[in-house]
Length: 385
Image (cartoon, rainbow, N blue to C red; front, side):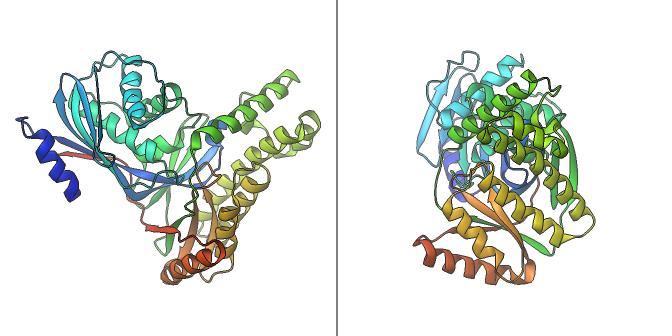
């Protein structure tokens, strides 16, 4: 596993008084390929890992001392006495990992650790989950505790959902933990069943960051509340369902009659987005890439019109991509209201696409986008160094 040079230099400074080799864990960012806001509604999602990472490097110690290489900050706390969260910073996610481990009664060591990452923040690429997955694997590894991958992913999820208070689903943590190289990860979030979907090497994943930043926490919490309210009203009306993803498309006219227009739009998006994920997975397995691309475009339209989490600049990026040579599909990725789009492009056109989308977006908005053409590296990796 390759360690960035600036991280190696920091390791010399932090670990010089320790007489043992540090453990390094690298976790990737994730790209939501299909399944916008379906995971916390018990639905289906399709995700990919990306070759941008968060590294956690550490050794055993009595206390927890974490250095953020990127922010020039550090935090210290006792591993068995986690105070309630009073803000939401990178330190909260670290404490959340220990809180989740303590909640599950795992006896873990403290650690002196360094955190470093290059997953863009605020772009909908789940830098927080990459941090959580890298850090929880580090703590478990240093403590000599072996768990199955889904249990590890759930610890990271509980850190973010229950300690940090972000109304996320399981997609981000599962992707970073379970992803396989050159495969997408399909997840049925109601029962945590996963499947690996081979990716066509002739297609490239291009992430275009609009550079409209947003905090995912607020929109996630608001939309989750709306979905829970819709579910509650349907159950009160006699529907025997435990989540919105159990609703069949042919029942949507009844949803429209029972709920106000805002809640009905949220429910409609969730139900139809699940259908798009399933059709998209099948299309990829059968090599029908144009059909897969159509599901991507329809997903974006639904996120814009029904779930209302797009942004005018994201819409510009998708509309520009739609008319470019070699583009299979394009959509917003992540929570929305800013962040990035994902575009699937034929390999032979990827270079011209990147050049054209950058020029055209800058002409339309005055903003130069950040663009990442990424492979699919797979999930978490670790080694002693």
